[in-house]
View 1 (spheres, rainbow, N blue to C red):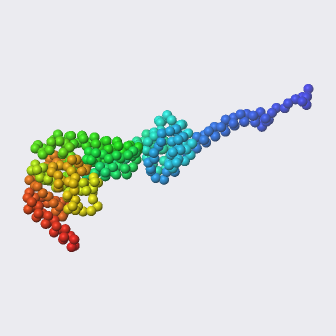
View 2 (cartoon, rainbow, N blue to C red):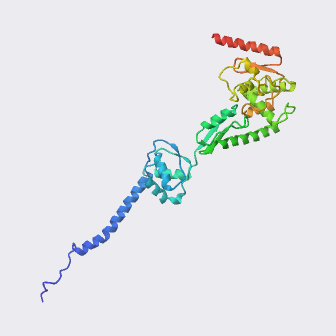
View 3 (cartoon, rainbow, N blue to C red):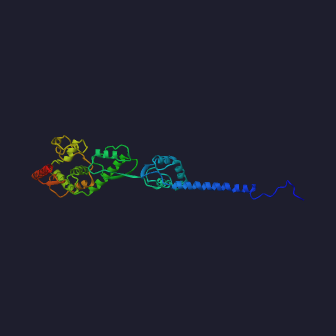
Length: 342
């Protein structure tokens, strides 16, 4: 019997059923392609060079991941802070982001920036307090030092050890002074324990005072023990020290330097620091002496000299007698005249 005209014919391979099957697997494939493309872009963006033109230290604040990302963007370390925050969250198992001053290399990628935030040590600063600075000069030095905070209150004159001090961003100036004071106490105590016998003073404080004078009298290391010997010999005989740096300290109101030459009238200044008028040691140090000056005072050179004067060659000439001192002064003055003529 012939088929009815209403009977369905078999579907061709390109018919609706086949199209439905194609649609069924095309959608997941498209999603997979899109995910792969997104992952590829994310990986490329994660490793791509950043905008920072040169290595630079940046202060990273404490805050949320997005706040850290924004801070980095503001400093020109990264672009796209929201994308960076997502990268940080996606890699959170690698560790927390640290708030500190950190150094980022030039053109750092997201991957490098995150590694720095998680593992790099903070930037370390340093400040050097040279030997012979007064308290006012140390205060000025610390005020200008970068990355410190807080007031640089005057340290006690002489009681800070000249040295180089390392510190991190945000360290207080007061803590640097406290470290310098503690270092001075420890150093002075150690050196005092090994001092020579029969020194004409009985306390560490007096040793520090004399060391501060020796520090200002010469910058030549080999001369310090000889100059210390002169002052110690004078103390033993009851002679006045007659040290120009003590007069300068008094005339400069503790600044330690004058913008003019020392004048004869300065030698008459009524001050306990004027060792031309006052016998013995002044009441306190006139600067922060270094270890070499303290050592020179505690281990002076074997010398009977009572006088010294500049020799015109950068050092000093020493003598045991006043006539010898007068001769050395005449030699120095002649050298000064000769240099003026040339």
